[in-house]
Length: 139
Image (cartoon, rainbow, N blue to C red; front, side):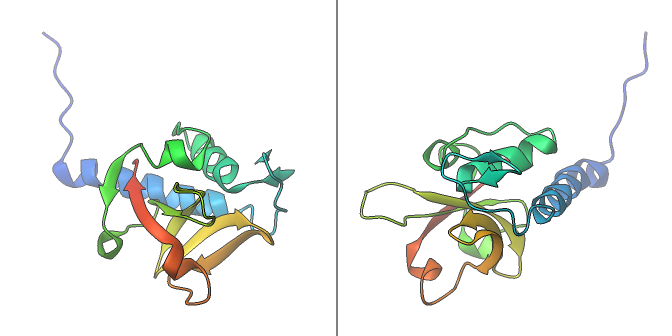
């Protein structure tokens, strides 16, 4: 009989945290990359192209669109956000999720929008705070 592998509970819970940290680091590599509608590479990203590309570079497959990403993973309250969570916004009059980014901690997220890949506060009173609709944990 082969001996089984036993993983300490601390090690098991550390794995998603390490993966999240790597996803945040990966995303930060693209700061300043231009916004490109439909873009999903370092030549240019739209919001969901950025999140799907960043996660894929760390071995995590998520859907390509913001609305499809919103239907994956576990729902997370704003007060329980952790680095690596996907955060979602409604940026148009359409009744659906239209923007996604990666939460990086301290009420900030990294995303691709008009000025390209940037870090922004989810509580920005001039735009993002009122458009926040929820978060998902896929790790």
